[in-house]
Image (cartoon, rainbow, N blue to C red; front, side, top):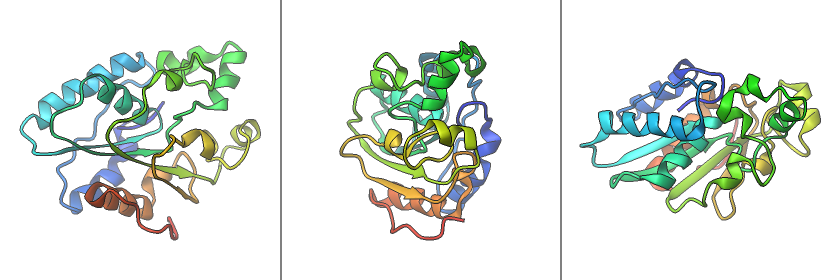
Length: 208
């Protein structure tokens, strides 16, 4: 599931690599700026019912906002066949970039779901319960967004800080890729495939 302001085309390369690894893949599209997180979770629920009702195991992979949509969906009605989950550059603790937009009353540019991605206690990320399923996180620490990196303390991918991607007690690896292109890295695909298959990430290496 793609992130904010993107389409399923942004996940096409990763989807192809997962298909080559033997997975049946549904690349979910949704209007990321046109609804709330709960509404996006309903879209995902409908897709799962349509594509995967008979599947023996259903895994989830989401980039950025897409990862939070997955978390919202799984907090409400996880499928009985739930497998593993990989979150790519997720703003699990919010994003200072979203804070910047909100402070300047520009949050509407992000859409209803994006407006809630701030780092405060009232933000959407803070409202999500800790995951009770097998999940791993891949964060990036390279930026092509200088403004975002100025706003974010510590290592970041230009949109989400490494520390803000974390969830306590959830395995996470950090790769030298930006938020925009993290899902396209060859190692990213290998790490996703490894985690879905074994529940563990391989050692980090060149991620291009």
